[in-house]
Amino acid sequence: MTEPRVLIVDDEADIRELLTITLRRMDVQTATAADLASARKLLAKPSFELCLTDMRLPDGNGLELVEWMQTNAANVPVAVITAHGNVEAAVQALKLGAFDFVSKPVDLENLRRLVNTALSLRGIDETSEDRRLIGTSRPMQKVRQMIAKVARSQAPVHISGESGTGKELVARMIHDSGPRHEQPFVPVNCGAIPTELMESEFFGHVKGSFTGAVGNKDGLFRSANGGTLFLDEVADLPLHMQVKLLRAIQEKAVRPLGESREKSVDVRILSATHKDLAAQVNAGKFREDLFYRINVIELRVPPLRERGEDVLAIADNLLARLADSWAIAVPSLTDHAREALLTYRFAGNVRELENILERAMTLSGGGRIERDDLQLRLADDDQEMANDQMELDATLTERLGDVERETIIRALEKTKYNKTAAAKLLGISFRALRYRIKKLGLD
Image (cartoon, rainbow, N blue to C red; front, side, top):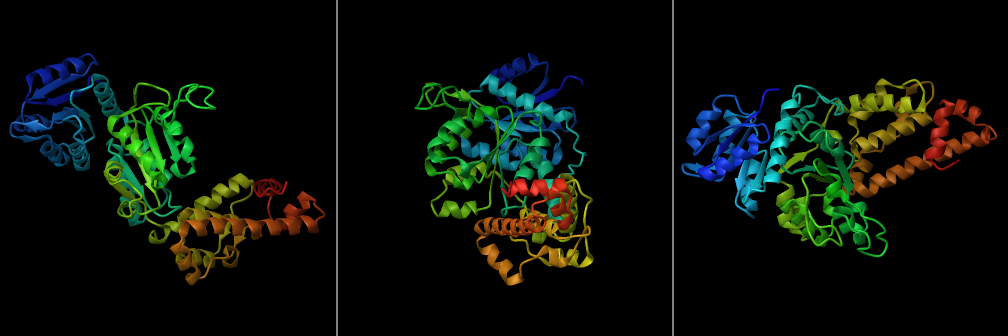
């Protein structure tokens, strides 16, 4: 590749010179502009890989340039130089489409990281299609478009949607489609970490900092350094951790337990929850300042019942995957079974669909899944499930496990615990039966 070019927009000559010298040492060519008008004129020609702009300019401000570039120079990422501590301006810039921001006085190490991340976009093929997201419905086309758009930014994205819709998959796709794709993607379930261990898990600790700290630990932020930290079920964070998380995000630094100094970190924050985060703020369960910091861009993942015939494409894909893990031929869904799936509401979304198909494969025979094999709930029961989704999703999983367990036990008893004969009786392979026995704890 030829040397990249960066446009520097600032009305202060010494700042322009400092940034120019810094970038030249990185083998990056530069051009400079002292005002909005000059910047727009230079950007009219597609010859830049990045634009760095100050907020205050003689004939306007950096936000105006960011907004103008979304229409007139959309392929050029733009980063805004904000006053120290001006979080509102930084968030506003990100909402308007800025790639990232850096605060004054400019930390040259942070600036170099930002530039390198932005220039990494040059090697990404935007036309390649990620096949992990199945379906061609209009809602999913919108999701794909949003993924492509936010992947080019460093703005925090909050992924909302019901349980089981695939929010972590969307987060991984954003990471894999962006400039950090070669760096770590670190997912964490915020509701699964014991409260007393949260600070150590997120920020790390040094040996001897507390009882049981037998060695140094990096923590999740530093493990994700250079990459993406995905905060799943972020609404489950206790309020005292929300304060510390906000500081880490704003300062781009963490202080491990037992350390006297903060350590800088460079991570992109993605978050998700099945809860209504705005309602959590109104109820006093989630800090408003953290809400606005992580919810710069919201990406909603639609429930399965809004995706039309996508359900059949997903079902076929799941059946192929399950059949491969069981080492059996892929079973087919009868027309009646497919019709039933199209009209079912799926309160547990894709996760529920997978459970239904796994059970149906265990109970069906002859390589065909009939409507009755699906054992779908009635519509009124389905509506009841939607009212308390998380609790009922767990209940459904337990119930399916009970059905499978009873069926396998009956087959084993009937064949005097001859697994080969039992597998034949159930219409599945010996390997598939061993897999089910191990999963259900029957071995």
